Structure formats: C-alpha cells, structure tokens
Image 1 (cartoon, rainbow, N blue to C red):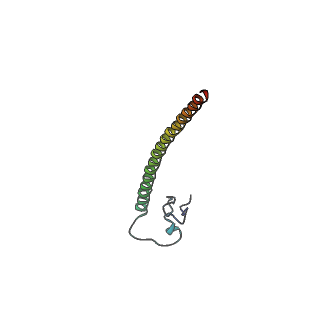
Image 2: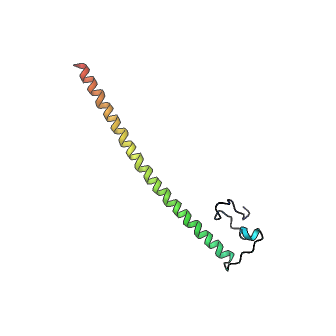
Image 3: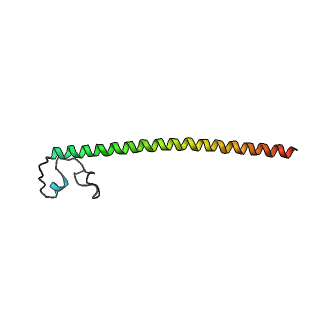
Length: 96
C-alpha cells in the first residue's frame, strides 16, 4: 500500500505510510494544528472502535445462530417423534 485511499467511500481505509495523508500527497495543504502522529493516533483509535463494534456484532450473531440451531434440533426431534407415533398408530390399527 502506498498511503492512498483504498476506497473513496471510506476515508478510514488508508495505509499509514510516512508519506502523510492523502491530502498531503495530492498537494493540498492541510494545517489544522494536528500533527501526522496525532492523525495516526486518531485513525488507529477509530479503527479499534470499529473493530470492537464488529467483534461485538459477530459475537451477538454467533449467539443467535447457536440459539436457532438448538431450536431447529428440538423441532427436528419433535417431527421425528410425531412420525414415529403416527407409524405406530397405523401399525396397530391395521392389525385390528
């Protein structure tokens, strides 16, 4: 990666090179009193927050999947039980 924006939609997807921000590479002067180290720290903090949020969401999704799998397993067991009862009734009624 060369420090340019990977996506025009998300300014946080960007390589932390020594060349500076994409605005500096494009020749635009950006001087708002924030050093490149501070910018990198802000970017890293933002990325960590996004990672943490995504991690929490994935854990939530995993719990939901486990719950749904348990419910599916119970439903399949109930279907099997009902089929067995029906077959047993059919056998007994056909004998008499």
